[in-house]
Image (cartoon, rainbow, N blue to C red; front, side, top):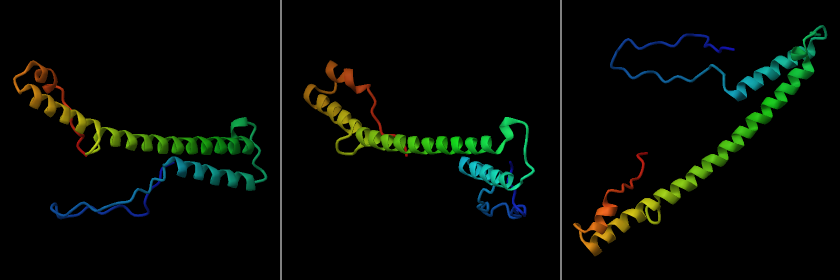
Length: 136
């Protein structure tokens, strides 16, 4: 399945002009593909002369496939929500500006330096350990 625009997009003649913003019309997301398959199935159901010999092409099999794809797509969406929330909690634990692991580790390094001195073997053990926040 390929979606195409009714008219082609125009390329600007001025090379300094910003590129035009476009919206995808391919309709190839999993939601859209399931919806298209359901639409095709409704056409097949309406056609009384549609009686294929192949089991994979029969209306009941297509309906079962649509139900299976819908269930799997819902499971993926649920799993994505869970992992996204877990990543947010992880980032809060690691990178919080007041109680995060990175902030705590950097404060410990400063403390070791102030207690034992910058040239001490204790500070030499910890000064090479890098803790930094990711660039966002």
